[in-house]
Structure formats: structure tokens, C-alpha cells
Length: 286
Image (cartoon, rainbow, N blue to C red; front, top):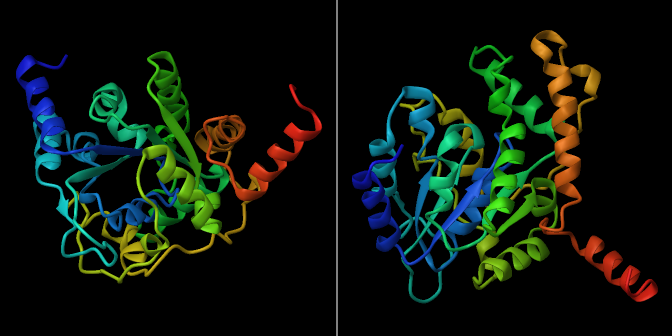
């Protein structure tokens, strides 16, 4: 239960920024790279990286979330491309399992469509298992942290409460960034310029909220100068362990992913849009 005083603090956050954009993504779906594009958007001045992370991993409370949103990363001296005046917008990126039951609170902060990112779950789950192993952690992390069941529930919440949203697949925006980000910006009522898709490497920027524990997750994107094409192979389903229901969970997550891929809310590639226009001409009224 959110107290009136806590709600008032979130209202102050809404009033402080011109607009707030919310990105929700399962882990290892190139979400930080996606957000990095928005760092170069002229209207965006601030970035808040996973403000609910401390609640999930460290037992913090909503006051810590409020502090994170009040003191986001100032992008003014980080931007590589921003012609003209710099705005006062805030971009928030979050994980489904970290925000958890506070998802309605997160969506209440924005007047823009919520952006849900996806990636083939065989890829994103295998990638997170590999990253866990890289630092000596148990690769069989809690299944809730894959984010798939939660993101499906959160999209249903948006449908139920008529909260606008879009779905963007990592492979699409990494392999076809220009047409995909053009459409995204159009839906968000933001200007688009190809200059947003390249930037200066900034490995010195610190966005880790856990005293360095997650530093290794962001070094590649912070050291990058643009988006990488997604050429990663898709692991076979039987490559996942059966232990703790992992393989079954991946199979279920794949079904969710396929449903989201078919959603009318998904931003589609140029080829898919062309195919749809062709079908509409051939089969009008269907």
C-alpha cells in the first residue's frame, strides 16, 4: 500500500520532467543498448537505470526508488549527437521482476506508450546463464528472473487498464535500426535522426546500482559506438538443463514470445510491413 506522502513524491517526479519514457525488458534483451539510443535523443536529458533494482536485490524501499528517480544520470556531457536545445525528458529502464508488484506505479509515471522489449528466450536465458557463470555465480538463477511470465502479465495489465504500449524485438532493432527506430519515435511523438544510432564510447560511465556487482553486464554497451547486429545463434531447447524445471520454463517462455511476436503492438520490420501492405491489396477487407 502506497502512502499519500509517497504518492505525492512520485507526483513531484512526474511534474519535474517534461516527459518520462518507460522501457521494460527481460534480462539480456539488449535493453541498455536500446536505452543508449535514447541518450542521443535531443529531448532526453536524464536516464534512470533500473530504479527498482535495489528493492529486489538489497531489500530497499520506495524511498530509495524515489531517490534514484530524483538523481538520474545527467546525459548533457555524455551525448554525442544532440543538435539544438536539450530537453528535460527522463528515460527509465526496468526489469519485469525487479519492478514486480510496483508495475502499476511505474506506468503511472508516463503519458507515453510503455516500451516492452523482447528477444528469443532461448537466447536471453542462455546469455544470462553465461553471464552468471562468468562471475562464478550459479547459472541456474531463479526462474522468475527470466521475466517472461511477468512481462506477459504486465502487458495484460496494460490491456486491462488501456495503457498504451509497444513491443520491440531485440533482433529487429539491432538488425534494422533505422526503420525500427523511425517507427518507435513516431509512436512516441519524438523526432528521429540517424545520428541517434552512433555515439562515443563511454566506458567510464557508471550505471551499476549494486556496488559493482553488475558492472560486467554493461561494459560492452558502454564501450560501444553503436548498435551491434544480432548474429548470435539460437541454442537448441534440449541444451537447457531439465534441473529445476529449466527446460520446461524455456519452452513456456518461447510460447509467450511467439504470442508477443504476433501482437499488433509489435513494431515490425520493413519486410513485414511490405508483406502486410501486399496482403491488404490482394485480400482487401480480410
